[in-house]
Image (cartoon, rainbow, N blue to C red; front, side, top):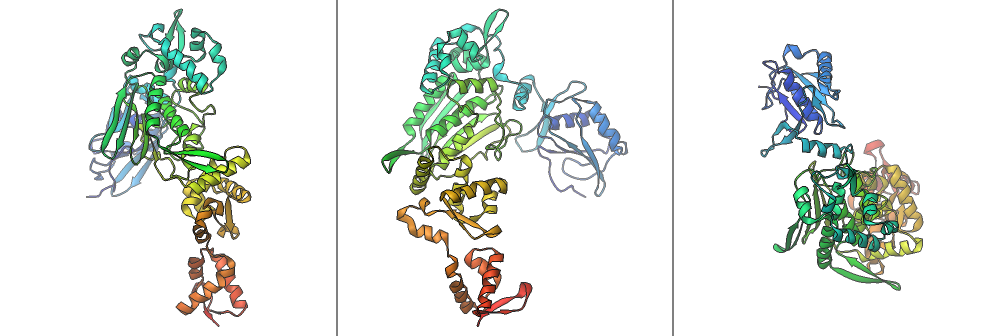
Amino acid sequence: MASIGFAEDLTHEFKSDKSRLSDSDIIDAVVAFANTDGGELYLGVEDNGEITGLHKDHSDIARLSAFIANKTVPPVPVRCEILDLEKQVLQISVPRRTSVTASSSGKIQRRRLKADGTPENVPMYPYEIAGRLSSLSLFDYSAQAVPDSSYQDLDPVERERLRNIIRNYRGETSLLELEDEELDKALRLVVQEGGKLIPTFTGLLLIGKADRLYALVPTAETAIQVLVGTDIRVNESFHLPILSAFEKITEYFAAWNREEEMEIGLFRISIPDFDKRAFREALVNAFCHRDYSILGRVRIQINDEGLTISNPGGFVEGINADNLLDAEPHGRNPVLADALKRIGLAERTGRGIDRIYEGSLLYGRVLPDYSQSTSNSVRLFIPRGVPDKAFVRMISEEQQRLGHSLPIYSLLVLNALKQLHQATLQEVAQMLKREESRIKTTIETLVESGLVEALGTGRGRRYLLSAKAYGTGNAVHYVRQKGIDEVRYEGLILELARKQGKVKRADVVELLHISPAKAYRVLNRMADTEKLTLHGRGAGAYYTIV
């Protein structure tokens, strides 16, 4: 029995074609793939992976591709290919679409994983369509008028809280000069329908009365949990407008966010467990980018390992955990995001993610982690960590010298070198998952500023943090990381040759952590000065002491 060699999952599906799979089943499968993450449909394969072959009616792939395009709305451009395995199998590759796709009969489906991990195609319901469109930035849920809502559902107390936030967080002061209705219109908290002001989802989420918010937007739930070891110290869930929930959570956070102080010259700076600005941006992001069309809650957990903030709704189209720092800022709820920026809670440039990373980088800690995010939720984990005070001092002094904060890429490179100790440009770029050309400009700028030192030239050029990063009390560690300079190269090579009887270029590369080209030059120089004798050529060449 021949098998295709892998199992069905969210992006792979098998269909038996022994009795000729119906046209409607093919269209349904294509639509479900298009409305999820795309994928491959294999005709002629059983559910268990057994290859049973393609029906002759499906061998005309040009005709089948045209048929699929004609039976899907908007047309799905699939790619068909016949695979010659034990028996013929048809692979239909379906791209992920940037819109909601339906069959020509109006049927809309999507894929999901069942409890046992196997995939299935299920109907996409109307409320899910709104969530899908918002994740593709084609629909702004937060800008829509709330059905069955009235202007009286907005809370004057919450509106006053909004005004206080504008004052305290340096929002647009011109907003404070507006009357209540004008303020609501300016922030698009309301829309006018039939001569009446109706709250938008943004309005109800920000300043709605708690009971009306619970009744009209039951998905707007927030939870906070604080654990010390396995003991639960705080465990609370509530339906409150965002501004009220923000202040409540901030109070809990402040109570459990320990701080220590250190002196840098005439200044005293505070080093918290978690950076306050980073926490604020992460919390605002969770409220701002969550999918309010699906059940779930914004959840904050503080424990011995770190801080976790999660929200329903995965990353929007084009955003993933690897390109967060480079992607063009855009969100799921643009009107809500704009309101939060204008009142001062969110980063006005749309680069709040920089603040989140900066909150860890400034203290020499491990980077924030988004790796546990899925298509259904975004999960940010900010690890705890002992601050590197010498590193903090170096960054603080450099920023005081410059008169402004260091760019986020400079902080990323410094953090990478802190972890790698000594690395080439290629190794730093690989760790940061960025192009070498971009990292090269940053790292050479840091060399010029004296924060990074460089050893060697060319592709073998290596970088390490300068002595500033180790402080006066840890000079030994700095010397160890800097390694052996060229003055000592020959002595170490001779010592190795005595112990081994001979030495190869690869031995020198491993011993001195230099490039093969540089090792070759050093060995040739020692041969020219008659300290070593060369034996053989090419890969088998070695050197002995004269």
